[in-house]
Image (cartoon, rainbow, N blue to C red; front, side, top):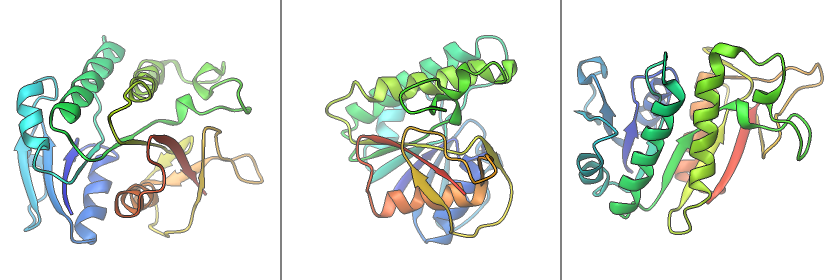
Length: 213
């Protein structure tokens, strides 16, 4: 497929890029620093500021789908920057009449009890992660208000870090997935597998879903 990947050099986005390359997709990597994108015959690196809606629209329009691994620069105003970026991406996707938009979500908005408290509302949730978690949650809320956009939002487990690409994991919905010991984890590599699986074989149109071991 011809896919645009927003944030292709980020913590999660770089692993999604690896998985897309592994499966021989054509990727337009939309990033702030094109020099950081690995050189590959299937990858074209293009500099863009996601807040530039017109430029972003033009880059998304020819693609079969887009994956957003967007994250704003951390620091003061992190939440506002996340929300502004999300709004721009949604606006550009709609203007481009993009067929599908897949979005990297966060574990913070997942429920720790069915229909109850979200992970980011727990007292133990790290304060320095709160702005980003709330901004990512707002992205989901905005997507749910778009009746004419085919979107999917994939939340990782509570712990996501480098590890093995096993291809073996569980998929869930709005609740935080945990194992028998109460742990909630996924490798970056297997998160990327789950995301590209959904790209190739859509099963969660206009839905949020989650992945964990």
